[in-house]
Length: 497
Image 1 (cartoon, rainbow, N blue to C red):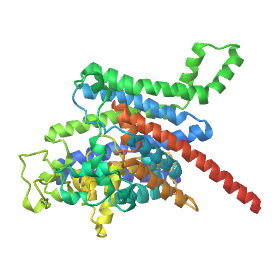
Image 2: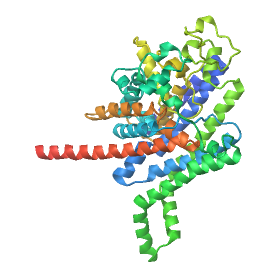
Image 3: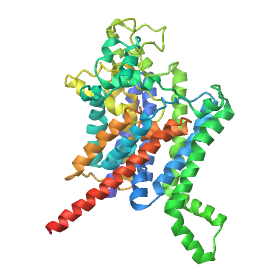
């Protein structure tokens, strides 16, 4: 009976998304761009749930239980995605762009890593766990990744006092930023005075003096920046967590072991969980196809940002106040122009990553809610100048996150794994606190476990590995904290008993 009910709900959810997609298409053909985000999000959600794919689980399982399954799956996904990315870059069909390089990536990754362990899921993992009915993840996403991020980029106070004066002076020298947008707080000056001064590059550009060709994309971005590091990590994971048990069995069978047995051990580790490894391959390929399709949409409509399509449809108030128009020949209607001071014209951009990305759209969701309660969220760089705050139903990246939730929900229903579980006791604290730390760790780095690590490492940006290193370090700290907390709690209970 329950199995049939779950199947019915799965069909209802898919039917509702099909109906929503049809309505968008009938309203305006430009919404095909948004529909693509919905269904790629849906695909990610199904694969994440089926493979139990979570970056928090990967670190937690290794450090707490010595289980390498998830770490192996992530490395497999990274390798396949890097190959697809190299093909797309070589054919000029990539939407990927590197991020500013700096120590802020390591610090942000560490904060994020602690948060994802406390919350019981990374940014992508928390979304798919919502689809399974996990109440702790709901708290982490709403109060941490959404409201927490939005407040974080708009406040001043004590944070302002922590900024070096050189950052403040550098930010104020950027006259092309509207003055009123630089008035909200520390994050504006951090971005304009520090992050935007940092270099951006990929390995392909470094080894080609800034003019990469096909061979540079495959050798630099894929082989050097993704495949070799991923292979090294797999070897380290095998040597520390998987080798002992495998070699012990081999010696009982054969009496002695050699290099061939070591290679067999690595292969055994990779194929130990076929479900996770298969999803790693599919996620890597799907992430690449996502970039290809988004680039195709941009070519089809002659744009490079969904904001241009929103502008054409008369929704200019959803957008940011960028200094330059992507479409300089288009004159927006006066009713859709936001007042801008100085010589800066109305922008026509909105957060539109062009590939798999999480956290920025959750921040937009939080900002949208706060503005409904009277909090002006347009007076800062993150929302007012770069990403905009579109209405929820016109936010393409937010629909991708919703697609992940619904895709996970469908897969969980089909697998009879959906259970709504509202958190009890201290899980309230861990969910909210972990979500806040993930939000605080994703904004300074301009990304999370997906946008700052997975996408960048596979795309040839060494920033990805810097952030990933911080993320693993943070996860290690988080696991150690939980071990201490659990032992302390058990000791108190035993003492009370």
